[in-house]
Length: 443
Ligand SMILES: *Cc1c(COP(=O)(O)O)cnc(C)c1O
Image (cartoon, rainbow, N blue to C red; front, side):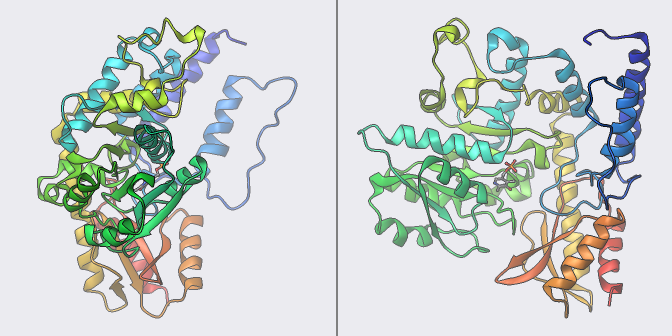
């Protein structure tokens, strides 16, 4: 079962060719997904590698709506670079255990370089560090667990997480896991201000606050909270500030957007997901700490059989989050940065922002469409005049079913709207025109 036969090498070469074609043509959906395919059975005797690859290629993979399709504009997509995909594939083959330097070797140094690049983007000091985890959800959980550990020096565990009303749902999930409650301040679709937090904070015992969570790029609207004044407030009360930049952090690359993020460098912890807008395959999210020792104290697992791998002189990614065994999932980001250079990253993020601005202008000029809010980062919210929730849902489902586009509705200011999120530099103005024309033409 573990041998690699001559025929298997041919299949491997076919997979490599398929990967090259696939990356060149993400829009080629060959199997619209309406009913679940009849997949090969899991049986006592296997069907072999070649037939299994054929099933994967023809029955499974083409039915996904790929996040790098140029008209995947729902949620937050992701368009990995070929260099990142190649590194990701090789990483699987190399069986790298990414938890400790003893096992992972230079993979740790490569991940550290990618973490450093993210820290530099945020303006974090030299000692800042962190780890790559599976997603923004685990990054937020890990940061909040570290915050609580750092703040429970006096023996009592704080229980309240204070967040903006537009904070991501993963913060509620983290609170539920931790046995904490989330207190919200401000309005869901507006950037959070210090003045929104102050009255909520004054009604609490600051010793009971785990952390204040601000968003740098709210998922629904792209709004960036007023980070500098929130950082001032947290400093005044001696509170841990966590900034969730899972989606928006990529915009730190763009000089014209940078001022909106001022204050991010003062966060105690920070989440940035390279698998969203930094062109890395799923899954890859970074949790970064201004004082990594505080995170290590909270997260390091101890056991007799771990002692030699986890001595204090080593940089062990397992120490900084809710995990032990882990994929060295920062390696694809590192490989892609090394291959393409940071300037190409900046240009790619700028092009997504430019496409979002084009879409907003096109909506504003349309008789049938209207903007539901001012665009935030690369999120454009719009409405089709006269449509009910059912019309949006039906249009969205039909567009997905025939492989045309993935665009889904949301709620803004209490009313339904369509949300377009641009994180793929291959999305063209022509793609925008096609999606908006389809909306205008549907009666
Ligand atoms: C996507 C997102 C998350 C969750 O990240 P996952 O990788 O899906 O777990 C958290 N916060 C924000 C702001 C996000 O956009």
